[in-house]
Image (cartoon, rainbow, N blue to C red):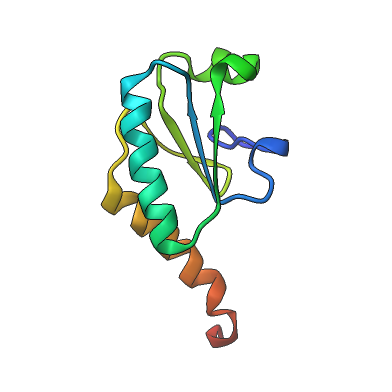
Length: 102
């Protein structure tokens, strides 16, 4: 696994993972953005807490909230809705048009 990637059960079955912790106001804002974008694009997402994953706490304690897209770090601290939509749309359209590739 390369730097910037997170794997295993954490990302299985979802395109977006929001890493945060209770009481984090930036996490609350990020959750609202992720929830809205995921609903609009019909994308599965999951939220995980640093309190339940010590390995994530060690890696991301100073960066939360962190958003992963397709198992890769997308952004942290602030979630830009347009940037998240572009990332999800680009990857979705790339996989969805396999029949058009030369």
